[in-house]
Figure 1 (cartoon, rainbow, N blue to C red):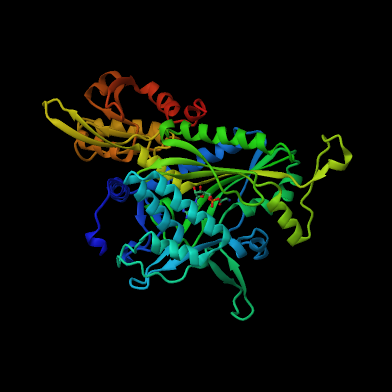
Figure 2: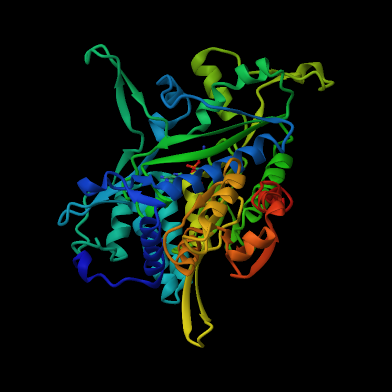
Length: 499
Ligand code: GAP
């Protein structure tokens, strides 16, 4: 079956709308598009970068400003290669892969099986869906690669391109990108592009604890790029090869980790609600299979256009990572806890609860949730379709647009005055070209929550029209009140109020 003849599912059609909107209105472009792009790598455009920066800022401030005991760092992408040996990524950051011999296309086995399970669910066979996933999990656990191949054949799982189940054997494939450090090839060291930001936090645990005189429990937050050679990179910016993570490691006393796990679980969900994601599109999914060192793990799943999928992970990771770094670096990673009465237990390696969310995945969640198509009856009694992004004002790329009603009679000059009043601390645009209606539409499409129009009445009484994006309602407001009103509506305070 060729890609061309493939039927598009409603989920794919919904995602396609988001992808097209993101491209058309300057949010996300395929990377190096003039050379036909690079698979699973994307660039953020003029509106996308603002939205993404706002998401990162709101996460950063929620972590560091609203928690007395969380501080931030910014570690390098390149790390000593032993880091990845200690963390387990060199030996076990693998995905089982299979190639289709006819199309030569490579797939992740778990993705193929999950797609089959999804198909079973769609066809009304939930038991079969559960059975196929649980068979796969058992085989993955035992590293039974021949069994996995047989499962693909028995389940008649075919390649989307060739339509055959002519599969190669299943092989492990490490997801880390590597490069060379040093100029002389023979002498240079192989180093990795970090596959997660978390390790930059672990290796700085002692530095931050000592220089910040941090007392346990405390957290270290970080935002930064991570790289994974995802083989089947699908679903737009959901799974990318270069992406950004926002992670926080919370160091606590052994035995208290479940308390903190539950604390962060609720706190992180509240954050997602506060930036505008609706409760019905969020759910917790406890991991059935835990890593040997973990005592609890869950995903906060979001209902993306293609169904509920992981948005954020909350993991209770015991003292695994610090212990590993202690062993490989031969540097103590202990904490001295004066508050513990039992002298024997005063020195310990802290336990860690981690919260980890992809900035790009959050971007996709927020964008797809905000995308709204409305049909309303207009003044002429006709049906009028409106597309708008109902973004929370605090994260919207542009907060306010200022327009003169017409380009004469002194209105542009007055409009520029209003623009100057707002632009220095509120992201404001000024536009004097085009009809007002079209300008409103354009602002709706990029999610601008407020538009201000300067008309002849403005010259008489110093009031302007303030239009609200979601309701299209318009009110008149004195220019003297405009800045304070908009600044409050778009402030992070509006997010904190809901947390
Ligand atoms: N330190 C833990 C860790 O990295 P993870 O579940 O592999 O855990 C955490 O990743 C989060 O990073 C995910 O919930 C997701 O939001 C984001 N993420 C992971 N891989 C990604 C990818 N290839 N593209 C975009 N985001 C990704």
